[in-house]
Amino acid sequence: MPVLKFIWFLCVCTGSVQIPWERSISPNKVPYYINHQAQTTCWDHPKMTELYQALADLNNIKFSAYRTAMKLRRVQKALRLDLVALSSLVEVFREQELQQGEHVMDVVEMIHGLTALYERQEEERSILVNIPLCVDMCLNWLLNVYDR
Picture 1 (cartoon, rainbow, N blue to C red):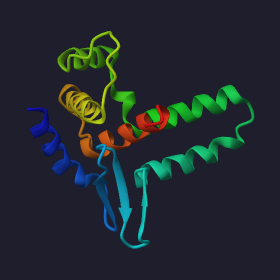
Picture 2: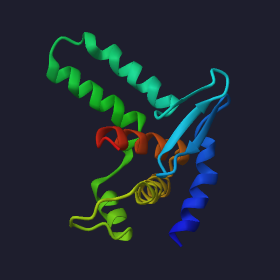
Picture 3: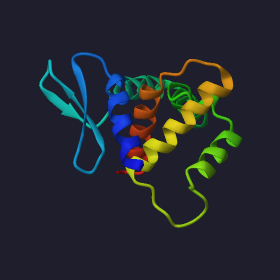
Picture 4: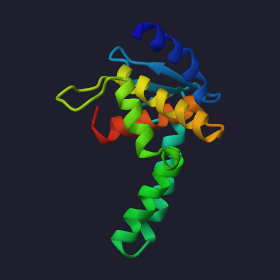
């Protein structure tokens, strides 16, 4: 069953980027992005690159605590994590059988968990969420934070 979910996700997440970009998958199942116009590839989603540039614009905030808070809030809103209730996160972890322990999640498990989380937000809040984009960007951010 996990293989079918992963194949479904590959089909859905191809919609997370627009022309001239294409989403592709490396052998270790980590997504990367191809710009056919510039003939380049990169690990970061094009929207994530835009977000990083927007975060750099906040570097002129004088006090580091405020600067950090603004950057975290910008990331939170861009990834639509401001919509996520902690109780929803706990429930998704339970459903995905991700309880306490030493288990290290692989990319496929992260995709399943993030997809379930964003689907739940869409259902609970009746807010239209671009699930493929949110999953790709959040996955990108998590892989960068935890250094693939």
